[in-house]
Image (cartoon, rainbow, N blue to C red; front, side, top):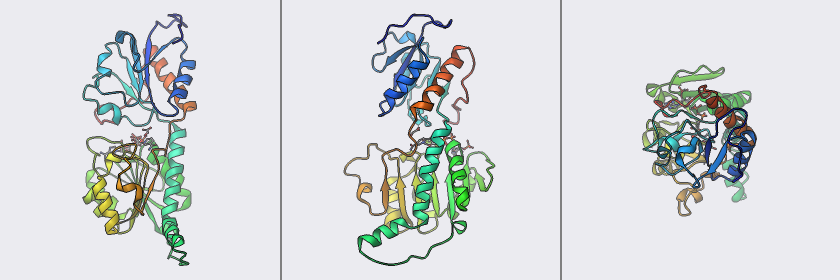
Length: 322
Ligand code: NAP
Ligand code: GLV
């Protein structure tokens, strides 16, 4: 570890705990430490004196560990999700939390969901199957305006998805906890509106956070409400979907297919039947990777705010859990 002078630019000495085991984790840490030259970085598990740690930039730190830092001032997620923090039963109370709300990540997600929406809408799965059998058959094709795409979650990523899909002319619906107004989107909100929302969603894009309210939301009942032959795109968290019910819905024809980027257990275990299911497309949690070039300045700006005695920008609502 580089020895840094204790005080630069008038800030008192402090330490930041970093833990992020992604391919790009080291690039995020490097970018962040360049922007915060006066902050001492401690990379998990080399914590040093726990009393030094004032900031934690952590992804899936083993549960119970954050509670061991008595001087923690802020917890920052290097991703958009914070379920990895709220699942910690010993998450320290009263410490503000922030996550990444990055337009670049939203653009990446919108590109992924638009690609898969078009894939399903233009029946590329059907034609891949026909090609494998050297079969020349033309399937009937709806126009985009007659195809309703439902987006579960109209947050940063869900709204970006609606904006990317709108120019194609799809009929768009969205579902959120509180009412959201988004041009060109039929907005529904709250539990009472879910059944109607699902019953019209021919392509369902899941961009909800994982919370106690949303875990297992897409089980037998919800999947059973979708129009027959609907297509599911899940880019949020695997545990929003009940995997056994998803497989049953695929096998019964309730769903024509599913594109899955996230899973209950990651990496997806070798013996998981989803790997070889003919109606399933799998990607390894890549729909919207954190970009070090935008993440590092955003995380550094949050640290500086707290150092100046200001509140975090757009802190996570601890009561809502996302
Ligand atoms: P966000 O801005 O917090 O938006 C969440 C949306 O879900 C909001 O519209 C919220 O409603 C809605 N919602 C939450 N709980 C709900 C409930 N019980 N009932 C109905 N609606 C509910 O989150 P985001 O930045 O868009 O990210 C969404 C999720 O995507 C993240 O939590 C993460 O798990 C996942 N993600 C995945 C990847 C990947 O690469 N696969 C990358 C980034 C993020 P309100 O608008 O009323 O609050
Ligand atoms: C990735 O899954 C994220 O939450 O950023």
